[in-house]
Amino acid sequence: MTNTTIDRLSNLIVQKLDANVQLEDIQPETALLESGLKLNSLAIVDLITAVEEEFGIQFGEDDLNMDAFASVAALAKVIDSHASE
Image (cartoon, rainbow, N blue to C red; front, side, top):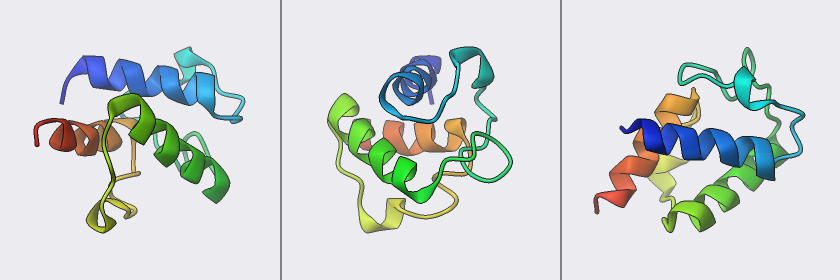
């Protein structure tokens, strides 16, 4: 996983989601759900769509699980795994 992916993902969250989040609020270990950014299900769907467009990837069924969305770094790892395919 690269810092570039984390940076791009963090910017995407701030710019594309209606989550009232500032860039300085996001760290690699920041949780996307309950204890972190507290993204709701609609925001997660928007995030999936935005990530697919931004990174030119397509999430598979195996990618759509709680572990993949546990943190910014976890999602960046999934994104990088697709980018290397």
